Image (cartoon, rainbow, N blue to C red; front, side):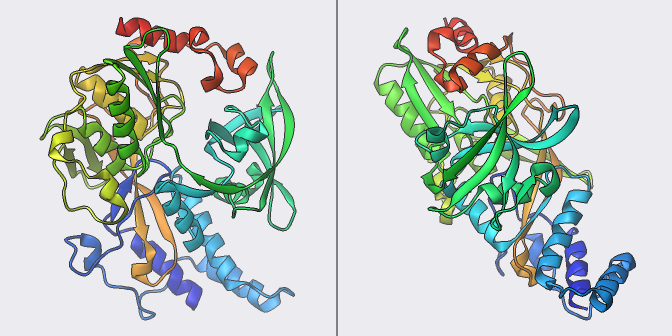
Length: 446
């Protein structure tokens, strides 16, 4: 009966209005409060008297196992597996159920604090030995991280992982979330996995790793003066989390103080992040009232987020406070944006806003093409642990053109020389004078 009620609660929850929004894997959510003007508070917590599940097949399977199996059933593990499988089977590529522990880890990551090896990954498919496999493609290796010290590279594909029992599984077998959990872990423990590393001429070589996890503080924004022209500042934005807005203004102000008047924003391999974070960063280029993002929901309704002075955010989101003096403060400088096929979601929103307001020249290759928005639901309000993420809206940049599955085409198209990545192991280790995309951005600024 308990399982039936929990599944019924899960299905009914899909009717709820979103608590908050996130653009990719970085989550930001507000727990529903009694006095919030939020439709989710109008939905009463569920009770055992509510209608039972409409999945009799699941009830039958459960009864057979319960009555006939020689093994004792772990009800909690079964329910977690059911919820995760339901989310995965919906066809929503970005839907997921998170346990309380996984939710806590995601919240810490969005606040710039995590325990792990220090990489960003995306779910990917590769051809290996004539078969297609799901892998975790590494798109960013954090500076000073255990992963960087161990020699992991952007482009490495995590193919197999070792779980806490010491058993080896492929990512294909476990699925994305379970495989991620095997790579994550507490500081001091070791992550064991095998990557498939691209080799010259095609194909992959298998490389095993055993890396001790550490506490890591996200460095989402870094900057430096371009040596060949000290009027140009290079700003790398690795992702958009709650550390990004203050780090971005700090880096920009420092480069301006050093004499930079032109800037290259490098969002190659940036997978996106938190909506409030990207809106805070965009506010430093735009003016009060300017639209940044419009959303279109299933029922045909929508809304537009515009630049505004925010003074009442609390909790972790105070880092996304935009003071009046900071709105539009960087608008009158000259910009270029570096993109590649892994520039996704919030990073695409950043790129499209600078394009639509004619503030920057786009250089590189067409972006990933993710123009849908996920909502995170705090299930504690309904008497359940964890959270649910699902896609609830399409989003549009100021131009009104959705780029989902299309991407954003650059003004200046230039591909990266893959042999350089093979030679240096990381796109950000390639010397400036050899990086064709960076050099094209420099030329565009001149």
